[in-house]
Amino acid sequence: DQQVKQNSPSLSVQEGRISILNCDYTNSMFDYFLWYKKYPAEGPTFLISISSIKDKNEDGRFTVFLNKSAKHLSLHIVPSQPGDSAVYFCAASSNSWGKLQFGAGTQVVVTP
Amino acid sequence: GAGVSQSPSNKVTEKGKDVELRCDPISGHTALYWYRQSLGQGLEFLIYFQGNSAPDKSGLPSDRFSAERTGGSVSTLTIQRTQQEDSAVYLCASSLRGSQETQYFGPGTRLLVL
Image 1 (cartoon, rainbow over the protein chains, first blue to last red):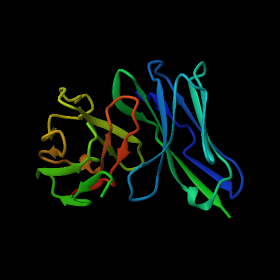
Image 2: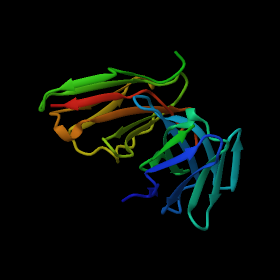
Image 3: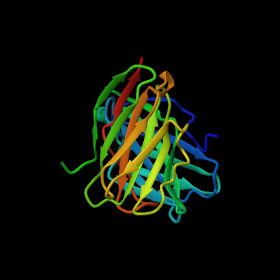
């Protein structure tokens, strides 16, 4: 079953505006969440993570928000740049096991 | 290099043949993972090695798939009697220890089974 869901397969945003990517999960055992970015023909690149003891983590233009009660997290990219055009994957894991469960990804296109 | 490396980068094989995919993790990382991404799909966990512990094989899709990690470093993923549905990008990742650690991915091996 799909324990991590990214319901928007694609997102188009204008350069300079905010990109908001959403992710929902079903397993309450998840306590560590990550966002990865992937360009074609490359492996995923780590962007930002958040532990379940926090509700927000910020790194430069990237901020991840976690709402544990809603089992929802989001990634905000501000301001969006053309180089941000890529597929973004949400991933989750539990302290009891190291493997990551990935969402299906969201293709972001930043237009000039 | 400092990152995770994988070889070959591309592999084309005929149905029924065996293939071996190699992963060199980041030096000093004790945890190693294999995932695959089929066309249009997200990443699917296959197997996880952590130090000297027994590997977590819960994601292997069939007994045609196996993996080993020699000397706590290099890992080989073997697919026997390949099928067309095995066509995917096979990704290897490593992390410093294990759970709640960032996993760093290699560039992947693109496998095409004809």
